[in-house]
Structure formats: structure tokens, C-alpha cells
Image (tube, rainbow, N blue to C red; front, side, top):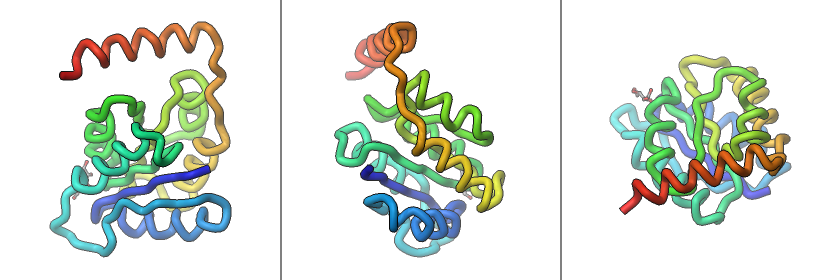
Length: 150
Ligand code: RB5
């Protein structure tokens, strides 16, 4: 599976740890930051990650900032992205299974490194069920997106 990852300074250290942990098992594209810079801005890294997910250049995305909130807000601005801020394992897999979540957003200042890895494993190991009720809701979601995208 091709995975994209991005983080600002709030998530930079966690991003590096996650990359090391996943790189033997997945093809990972790093959308930055390339180095720690306390002045950098999360939209600069999360936007290209979200666009790559929307364009199917990578299958899933991991977006990290201090709280995960800014990353999540930016990611959801891109048509075709279904991103969520995840702090517990149930939602990490259920969000994929029911809602076809394609970007997990994590707050590096909120969850510890080990728990962040558990969230990511739950996210990456889950698959969208495609059940009729979920597909029906996704269609409604896409209609809303289409109506509100110029
Ligand atoms: C950066 O200091 C911090 O504001 C950012 O990483 C994030 O938490 C925003 O949501």
C-alpha cells in the first residue's frame, strides 16, 4: 500500500518515528516538513498530502500537527478527502470501515508515540466494507461536496 505522511513542527518528531516504523512494510511518500522549523505552517504540508490522496497517488494519508485539528481542517478542504482527527482505536478502524476515511489526523501533543502507532495500525489494517447503507451515505456526502465545490 502507498502511504503519504505530512506534519508541521508540532508533529515533526512523531512523523519521523512513524516513517521509521512503517518504511519496511509500506511505500511511504513524505510531504514534509523535511526538517524541524518552529515557524512552519501545517497547511503547507497537509495540502499536498491531501491532494495526493484525492488523486490516488497514495492510497492513505497520515497528517500530524500539535493537536491534529489544523491538519484535519486543511485535509477536508480537498475534494475527495475524508479526514478525521483520531484519538482512539475504535474510530481509527471504524472510520475506514463505514466512512471510507482516507486520511487519519493525529495530535502529536495529545497522544503518545506508542499509542499513535496503534492508531495508525488500526487505520491501515481496516478496509471499507462497501455495505449498501455506507455506500448510500457516501453518495450523499459526495453530492454535498459536489454542490459546494466550485
Ligand atoms: C503549532 O504550534 C500548532 O498550532 C499546530 O501544530 C496545530 O496544533 C494546529 O492545529
